[in-house]
Structure formats: C-alpha cells, structure tokens
Length: 182
Image (tube, rainbow, N blue to C red; front, top):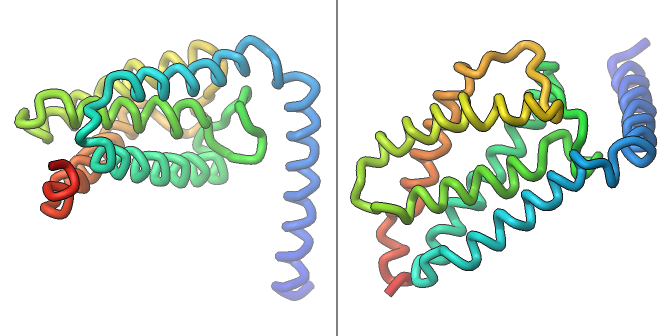
C-alpha cells in the first residue's frame, strides 16, 4: 500500500472508532450524573465569573481566558491522541478534551487569579496555580472516574500550568489594554 492509501485506511478506521465512541456516549454517558456534573460545572463556573469579574477589565481578562481555553483544548487533545490520558464522561463526545476543565474551570480560575491582587508576583501566582491544579484539580477528576492518566504523572502538569498562567498573565499586561480598560 502507498502512503496515501494507508493514511486513507487509518482515517476510515479512526472514523469508525469515533462512531463507536459517540454511540457509547449516547447510550451510557449523556444524562449520567458525571455528565450532569460536567454541564453544571461549566455553566456555574461562567455564571460566577460573570457576577464577580472586574467589569472594567473584561476584555483584558477574556483575552487571557480565551488563550487558556485554546491551549488547554489543544494540549488535552494531543494528550488523548498520544494515549497519555483518557476521558470517560465527556460533556461533548466530539472534542477529545474535558470541556468543563478546559473551557470553564481553567480559564475562569486563571482570570480570577489575574484580577485578584494584580500587583502580586505573577510567578508566585503561576506556581500556586500549577501546584493546586496538578495536585488538587487533576486528582479530583481522577477520583470521579472522569479522567484517567495512562502515561502521565501529576508532576508533569505543573510546568505546563505554570507556563499557561504566565503567558495568560503577560497577555493581560500589554500596554494596548490600558487604553481599553479606562
């Protein structure tokens, strides 16, 4: 077989597996308590942010949040595809990432950390975020059987969370936001 034929064959096999995952999700996951937990976490997290965020810093904070969402979903999808971890009770079966974690909890926590004590050391905030997310957030999701690390240790996540926070913080401290926030 040629490379193109092999790639087409693997793409078809992947599509068949995805169909099976979606069927399993429809019959076993959707409307389960873990699915509802994910839906409620996603909605509640954003409702809390809407109520308590600094209104005059909204665009600056949302820039950080959007960055966190994009990088989290991308890294999560890569980790799932490489077999480093898996998710069992996704809110949406089409995204190989855990939506409540990547699109709600992570960005909202980062945005609150950025707005809370804005003159506090971003490096210290990044360390706190990295350690708490890796050693409290991840084990909590493991405890609920939603997330299963396969070839991954919590400690590996710390520098990734650290870097995500620092880049998100840097995005919010650029001079172009000073004019918008006034």
